[in-house]
Figure 1 (tube, rainbow, N blue to C red):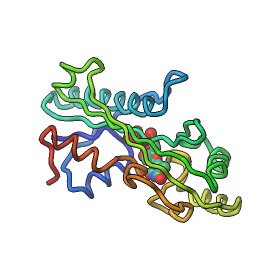
Figure 2 (cartoon, protein in one colour):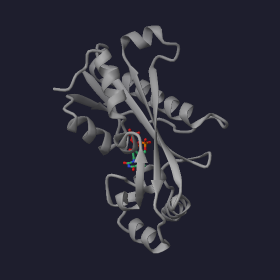
Figure 3 (cartoon, rainbow, N blue to C red):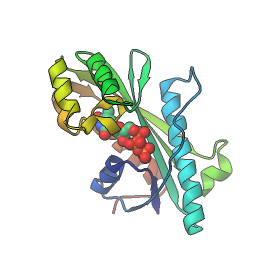
Length: 200
Ligand SMILES: Cc1cn([C@H]2C[C@H](O)[C@@H](COP(=O)(O)OP(=O)(O)OP(=O)(O)O)O2)c(=O)[nH]c1=O
């Protein structure tokens, strides 16, 4: 059985849309990483922490060690800087105005933990990362303010949701759309299939 270690409604919705049956477990962890760690490494490390925490919690709750626990983490990278969730509305405004008219990357790390990875992998999990390029249109200060007043930005990396009203800020993307929303569909489906987990 697949177990999602996440409190993100998006990841739950994506897995459901794709037809997976899964359980949920809490996987809250520190998202601080050592300075100098490349963003690709950072999202994989945080995804790994979430999956390990989820594995621990799931075992404590159910006693089961025959399941596969999934953790994921999404970050925006712009000009070499990692942007997570905005701290407040001002922070969201600063992030969105920096991204206006520019190109950035969205990275999602995914990590899987099961009894085999716990026994065989040095860190206890397997992890992968996917990168999507997002090109923003020029957006005005007024548009950003209006967007922030919808409340949509605050729980999302770099303060926007491509699946919501921020769709209008996007000129085009190169790569996976679902990766921007929190899970890279093709990569994840492949890795789950390798472990015998299929939708339905
Ligand atoms: C850029 C972007 C991010 N996001 C979301 C995906 C992630 O849920 C969130 C980044 O935060 P994360 O820390 O990756 O995840 P989370 O805290 O929401 O959930 P979890 O419990 O699994 O740790 O931003 C969108 O929904 N749309 C977007 O366009």
